[in-house]
Length: 178
Length: 278
Image (cartoon, rainbow over all chains, first blue to last red; front, side, top):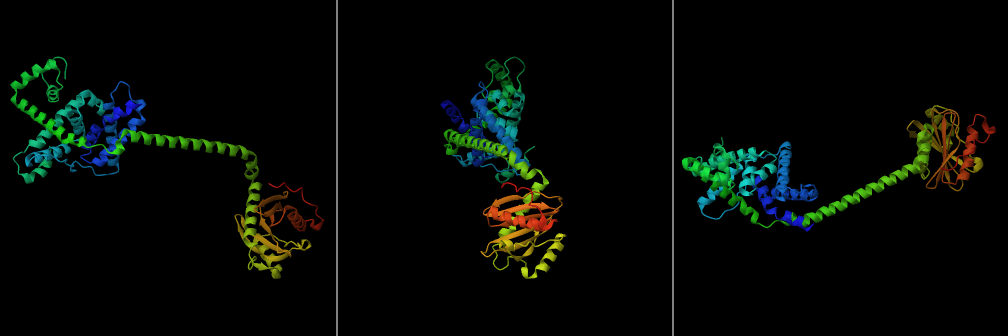
């Protein structure tokens, strides 16, 4: 089955990107999650629905693996608080754009997981609303409302208090959460 | 994204940000935004945010994937583990088969060994007597606790501990002289052992254990790594005579001991036919 490898291989960059963003920039864990996903996908290749596309099937597996890992981590009492600093990927450009970029990543990492997932799948991974609903296992109306709330919340986190001094901005992000 | 009518809603606005607005609703949404500048502003900020997110996370996928995520490597790994699984299944099947074979073979042997209490007792006494013989017969300085020079005391002591009168067998007719004896622990209580030696330095031991079994049993024979042993029970006492010798020589010893201990004394007949070696 040479096409199976090629079909899966093509999705790996997107899966790594999605995993890394879900795990707030922890690349090592993200690659573990992707590896786990790929192994499961290869093992259950014959079980996937022939009509469903490989892409959303892979994202579904990854998201489910992510949730169950979060669940296990929570049961073990591992700390995964909202305040975890996200690893900020580097960015070219001036000081202003770097700050803005940092605020974006930080603000994004403060969103609830369900809003982050929706935003990533739709805005970054370009999945359709229907595909996203299938990946997350929720009705499409839920996807739409999470998308709307996530965008608005991130906007407020980014621009809600733009005149505040720089020194306060880091912590200000936390205080501005409603 | 709604295909048909209805007023402009939040879903339409989100779909416009993502470029997924149904064409037939586009005009209506534009009209709405023209009339609501604050909504237009909100949407343009969402659009900026969308681009910023794509820029921020998109660059992370530009790095090459690590080799552990290559599908070819994962497939090879999967095949390896599938082969290992098959090997493990094969091993389990083989074990199951061997177990079945063993069980089939043992169906005749095991009942004899394990089913009756007397068989269990024989096994235990054989084990203990052979172990004691193996342990003490090789001792040059302390093969016994109490020497033959104190024979009377020895017999009284061991008789008292076993709760019945014992006789130290007289094996001089076969060239074996009493060296002495010792007390031994056994599961069901203390056991007694007398040790003999002939002129060639061959040693044999007589092992006694009080048991809750009446009547008499036939002789049983067991051989284990060059050590032979005869076992029988008579009148609540289990006997085991053990030596590094052949079955025929040992049988003579067993018969003499049997006769000397029989209530009929030396007149006693030879016991029931000796059991076959097992």
